[in-house]
Image (spheres, rainbow, N blue to C red):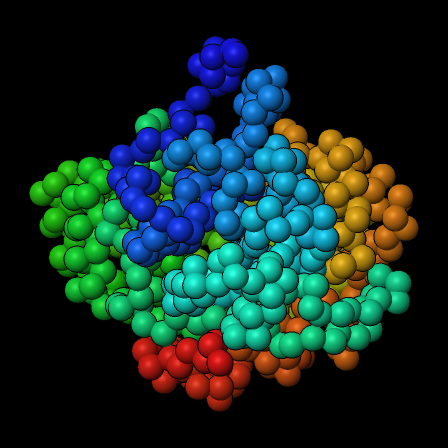
Length: 605
């Protein structure tokens, strides 16, 4: 047998043993392997995976281990030594666990799902996995539409898992060895509204368009109180530095802003905040238990945290006394204050105007103005920053060339603003990145079509020439990558066979530009006569959508109203200002317009 250290780069990715590892030797009757179908570097940065791993390991008789998608050198090592893909902690083959659970964070990681199953010796299709194989399950943000993987997953968990998962595992522990896999699936399907068993739901297609769904409504689980929900005060510290190598805490869940393009803003509603005391206590315990000297305060829009000032009043002195660097990602232009960045390096700030004109920002309900943009950046320049990164989207509904020109205009005005403070543009760096808009499920734009290749590539070329002439760095997303993401996000069961075919043809690590090859998918969709235009094209408002059997708490009628307001370029206020009747309050999920506390968890019958 060849040595691991002689065969692969960064062997620490496959050996486990990180600082902060829970007890793997305790007596257990249930073994769960938490998988991320991406690299160790990416998977170790996922907060949801961290929470669930510690939660499961806190349960009596349960051990949870981890596995990430290996790079090709490690896959070659496994195959050359006739070994199966195994867990990091105890090197137990995945096929010997009770559950193999995948955290589906991004559609372009689906090919790695097949990759990991094959390396683990686990059959792809549920119908071919007998009693000797584990349950293959999935959750995460993509769970709101995992129909493209319907025939490969035993069940799908929709929503937040801290409360139901211990109950599900307890049920399994009491039933293990007494019932068949099919009987257990029937049990969880009946008991838990947040569990979706694809084999127990029928969807009729005609031929790539769903026309009928016969099965239960799956209801997203929502945890009610961030101050009492299970939250580990430790995290695994890797044996080698990662890209995002820092302590991370979650200030709140949800987002009140209602940007019409943003799936996360709707599938994580309502807003639920920690108190500043709870957050500070968690920050200090996490730093002391890990030894990190950098802390990230995470949420969908960190500067919208209503108690951020109170938290920083306590946290900044603590950070200064203990040489801790604070990181505040996900800042909004209308709520950023330069003082929030005190104690950080005065190097770079990242903001997302999303659109180049006020009209288009109103269409997408971004709710920021030119005064927000330039006032915020002026404040950042006064604080000593000299680098600004700006994120925009192209291909948005109602977009015109004037909106594209607006992106260039913002960059030019930022250069002029910098000269007011420094008398020249020397030292200033502006980076503009343009992603391609993808009409995701559970947004007001879920009925919109994905833009054509000609439209996107013309706009990319135009922006590249204009911005580079102004000395602005410009980056954009490859069209084929965005097209595949749109197909996977919006597709249904009709593409399931194509995805497996593409994997067998060589698709791997599609989220990494150096590995992505559209040709694998082009051949697969052609092989199975998949109508791509039917999937990514515009839909009628009354169309049956592949994800219509999932209830995230926000109503379809709300999305339709917001879509109409978008076409009238009318904005909606944030949930902090008024209730916009999205459906969550009527269903008993919100106490007040901020959505804080008193959220009723109705996901167990």
